[in-house]
Image (cartoon, rainbow, N blue to C red; front, top):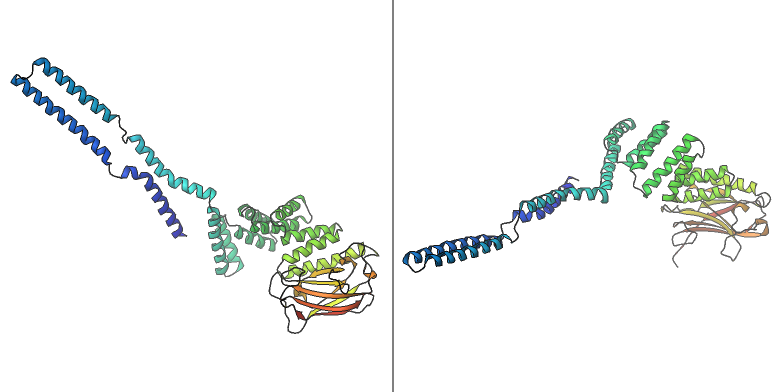
Length: 408
């Protein structure tokens, strides 16, 4: 960092030197010739005047002739000197202007960099490095908290540091301090960045935890988050909760499934999956007889030797389709890391309107673990299939992912 600012100082000094160069360079030959020409004219005038005085003394000139010639010489000398004085020359005003320009160059350069350049981001990056260094060197959470608080007091332009501090406060039941730290993180996070969206999403969750309901400030925080990042997991989770509480179970499922697709594996993902399952049951009950039709229970597992791909976008699709057709009758999406698992395929998962599982005698059940997170089967994806499953049967379908999709 010191090397960077040293280079900036050198460049600004060079820029100022260019502005001062007219004052520092030697006097131009043109100006020197002007001064020499003036001296030559005066010397020539004096020589001619002496010659005329000698002619006057020798009787070669009368007094009247001498006076006329001397007057002509004086007029010629005066005209020549006035012509030279009218030529441009460096004056004090120009020197002051050049000096002012040289001083303004570093000031203007610094101002433009601070306002239009990446000065703010550079400072945040330096503060972020200090924060991560504190996390590595602190022996315990209490020491980290003390050192981080001291650092943020002197260097507040550190959204990551405020975010860490906010989560610490929330975890330790200091909700008001947590909200204040989140607000500081919001203030310094770059506008429109994913970092700001993540902070806003966590801030919305903190507000919901404090308010215990979807208050105006919780809803505003969710809207602000979604405007920056429509796939923010925290905001989608809250929208799912809001829809579930309003008995809008289909919407809750959509929000939570979108959140699962963008989340990392962990307790949060498991909670989302549990919420999706509960919402599906509630949706089936809400839809009455149509949704409460046949149920196909499926046990999904990985065949021996196969593992879940490491790609973070990996999703497991389970769907049912008629033999010989490619368009699924119903489908669902789950976290592949929950395998082995058992799920129920119901009318709540149908993809086409006015469709009921009772309309089909048999269906093919397919499991597709997609590394790209899309329904299309690509090279390296895992698939499994059980053909001709009786819809009316009460038996559990054993569905093993036992094949790796090869290149075409």
